[in-house]
View 1: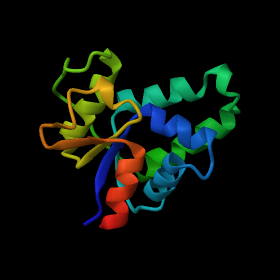
View 2: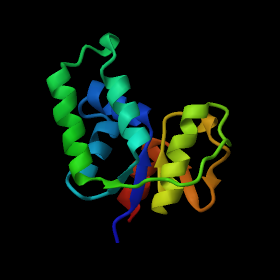
View 3: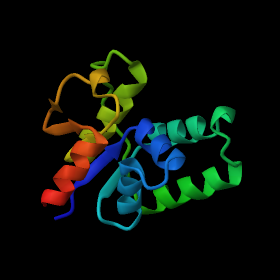
View 4: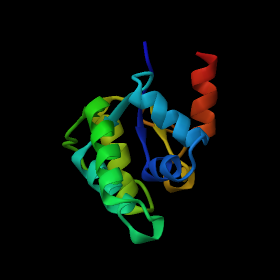
Length: 137
């Protein structure tokens, strides 16, 4: 069974900025179906807003195509529960999505913004940790 995951925005941005990086490899794996990627409307909107920031210099058409591809391969969930367990309020959306989708992993470069290494059966891991888990499987 393929692992399921929610990718924090920092994973998506890192993937877009650094081709060949671990985050880029994880996104490529999700796009090819090797990882079941879960999204919620709030997360998708967050990806859109961050990737369109002028400081990154991405062309709007490229952002649109990238996000369209991500959405096409992802499972869209609509969380019904609101959480407030993260010190960084927007990070609660990732946990809400992970719980609604009953995913295995929340992959983030900012684990300190989450309540611990696991939250209600969702393992919170770095991109490198997730890559190691995938290699061992």
